[in-house]
Image 1 (cartoon, helix red, strand yellow):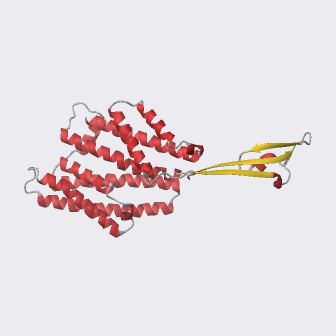
Image 2: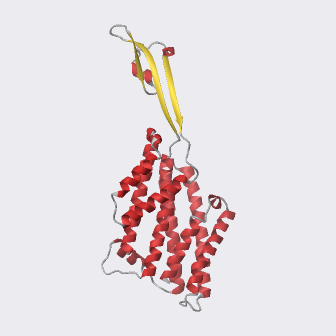
Length: 309
């Protein structure tokens, strides 16, 4: 039954990410469609389990298991969307994004816990999940998994690295997202020196340059401003998402082959595509935070896979 639970978690991740659209979250109709998709995808591991010769007479229990899991899934998703809407209206952007990230993580943890607990209850088996997770993370000696379990756990971690982490980073970066433009303002001011009365020209950068002159300026008509705005066209739809997916998977592979130093080359290559936008400080910070989060999560994924094998 442990294999069945792992296959259902994989089915859940596939149905919850690549097979779910944003429109499904906006209405009851979309939520029901999403639930039926979950049910359909869940039938695939159920059929595999039923026809492997290990589950004779288990068909009714398997169907009841799928119904319970998907019913609770629908309820949890509905509650999550309600909580997100409340948080987005009541809290400020920065604090709201952190709370939404916790809601998002809790939502996925609850889905996995429900899958495991439902199978344990209906089939009267104890997986000792907490002990096994601790053993994997702590690299406990003498702890071994069979090959099929290792493959399924590896696939789960890869899916989490691709989809779960990508959406989590998107939620955390929402308050830091910058506009696609770089603005440069140059103000040329004519003022008279207090010491000798001679006139001098000087360039200042900033919008409040008149406050810097300590009442030594002439009329405001002597102040001329030149503003240069560079609009940077946004990348194609979802290009950033796919770049992030490739980045995390490459970092994961580099961790598995113990080539951590190569990560620096990957980040440098990625930075070249956004070089012009680094003139905007807000974008540079947004890019840096996103890259660091992506590296951390990808390295953790690689660490867990190495622990499994």
